[in-house]
Image (cartoon, rainbow, N blue to C red; front, side, top):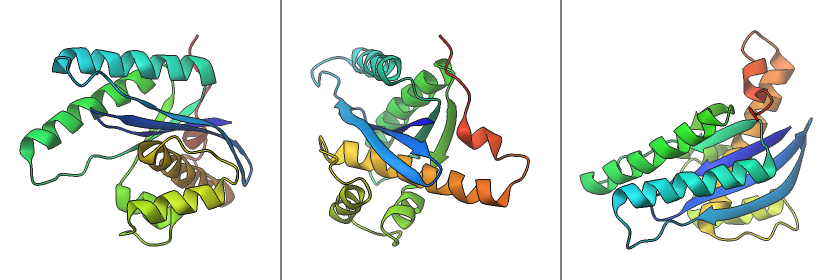
Amino acid sequence: MKLLGLDPGLRTTGWGVLDIDGHRLRHLANGRVSPPPDGTLAERLAALHTGLVAVIAEHRPVVAAIEETFVNRNAESTLKLGQARGVVLLTAALAGLAVHEYAAARVKQAVVGVGRADKEQVRAMVARILPGCALTGEDAADALAVAICHAHRAATLRRWGGPNVASLFGREPVS
């Protein structure tokens, strides 16, 4: 199963694609979508959508795991991040992906073992979990961490069984 991890941002949205086979995780690709900083908000959101559509078309994941928005001190920044996140959620949903969301602390707990880990610790653990992975930046490392978090959660719930487990593994993308 191919899984797309996404770390939404208006300046840069990180993405990472993993292949999950049971407990095995294999890194397939990672990168960033960076809308032009001098464009209007609408142009930047459109560029973000277009970039993610291209990533999804190239890698054909069946599931997307997306980091939830945190509220920071600057209300304007939070609002813009929320708008970018809305585009990320919409793009994944329109592609027919099963979409799952994870709080940053949950992602850090799953990858590092500590919910308050810093970005360098997350990056180091992603590199350790996915040996040979050439990270294209901090945002891509965060996106892969979200994907790893989902993969671990899906594997655990698969062992437990239950009626909602199938939704964690998605469905085939819409052509």
